[in-house]
Length: 322
Image 1 (cartoon, rainbow, N blue to C red):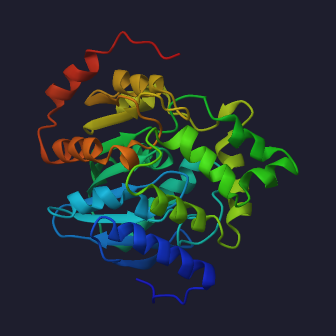
Image 2 (cartoon, rainbow, N blue to C red):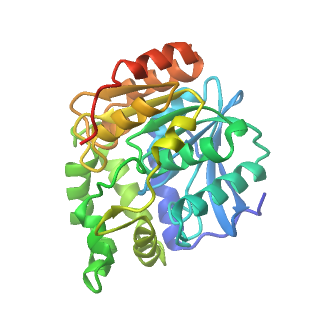
């Protein structure tokens, strides 16, 4: 475990907005830093009991899970890292291939905290990391909840593809409150005025101000996608080989990774089921936290036997991915 580092002005600003968001769920800040894959990784750590890792997506950072931490920490140790390039972690871009880079990071992060096996809940990019770990380190991963996972189809929003264009790409990734607010309204949530919206938006904006973040984002996006779409997609054979119980959760109107990607996962992963949240976009855990919490807790702490989840997957076996 590393010594608690001295924070610069921007990092203190992130710490402040993160603490405000955590307090919305009655949580005092509890975090630390470790070294993993040559990066300084910041993480939140709450509760006691069987460990659960929460993996955020390609924006903001660990505190996006504040409403899930509040519930899960009552019966679990909840560990929530800021991925490299996000939150208070090192602003170092991902290398190609993306799945190798992220698998190395999360494996070394688990090693640094002496985590032998865990349940994992992942959003978007974090869900793709979780599925990668299920394939590469199957004995270390118990149950998986994947929310709007990347890596299941070619589709990727045009705005990200434009980041690869010279000059224009720098404009796409630079800190921009108007752009962030538009993304929040059109991509992340349906209820843009949920109780904690302003605190969340401030935190998500502050994260973009860190020195090196914009450059690292542009480099990392080029690892993830080009004008042909996502570069790292799980094959049918890979999905068929996953044996852990998997709950897929999707927003009905997810504009980043359409719900058809969730159908593909549930059709191919043997011990899986899919729950589609009505009238939700890419980040239902923000404006639908009660629904998401009930799904996560019910799945992790409840019955997820292979038989029950295989039947759920087979019930949508004839659905086609568009």
